[in-house]
Length: 133
Picture 1 (cartoon, rainbow, N blue to C red):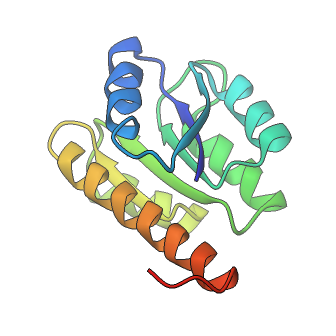
Picture 2: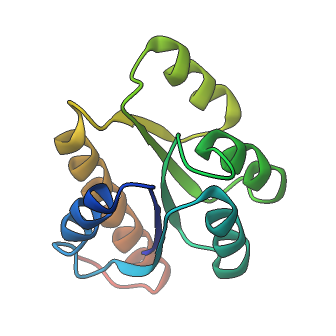
């Protein structure tokens, strides 16, 4: 699974990189700190999954999501935020995010969801290639 990370916090990026490091099937394509870089990378590299912070410089994660959904409906997108109110959850869903996790109290759930997505993709690829697990 090819993944892009985007967060303006170096600490969060390191934590996300460490989390992804436990999955050998994950190829980290890049980590970005602003929305414009993130959108450009998503357009060029076409990741299977993008994990994006809502609040970033130059362009918010919500705006990145809005723009990429005009071009790509299949890319999996997880939004992260310290703003975990129902308003942001609903807005993320309306704009086309696949999942939304609060950085403050749902980081473990994020890891479980990424693991589930990696397993699903691995099973799908094995099925398409005719291999059984």
